[in-house]
Length: 236
Image (cartoon, rainbow, N blue to C red):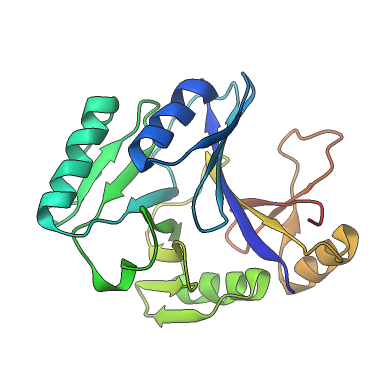
């Protein structure tokens, strides 16, 4: 087995409140809860992890979630449930589009998509979307990190897909990255793997070690080719 995509980590001022919001919205269970970290299990083997940070959100996130819907009525119901739980509509310049852009209670943007056949297999989270200057190159890099195939490729966007669970997608933007991302990916080597060996492989693939103030931790923080932070966890 190769290194796999393990989770989506969200910086949070209040992990308990934010974790409970997303658990209720996605109808997924909280499997661990403390003042410092809340874990929400998705049914595709991925985790949503909310961790305590002191840094405020100051710019639009470069990583966000897209939620799937099965019909126009289902899309409207998801939006209504999100707003009831504390989300708010936001304008990020999306114009007239068939999806709805909201922000969670801490201002993290997310989209509720109109029904799309390509997300029929994903569960409630259709995709994790990453702003990119070069979507093709980013998709190629991440395909080498987590071993998922590139299933869509265009100058404006590119996607990695898996048999079950959300896609990992890259969408072209002009804005530069200016702060540490509030959402990042965790990846994990297999149980018989080795963390230092995998980090060396990823560095050879183009990843760069990063210091985000992690001090003495059992994981390694890297950045991809466009500076997006991600963590390589210990094998499991």
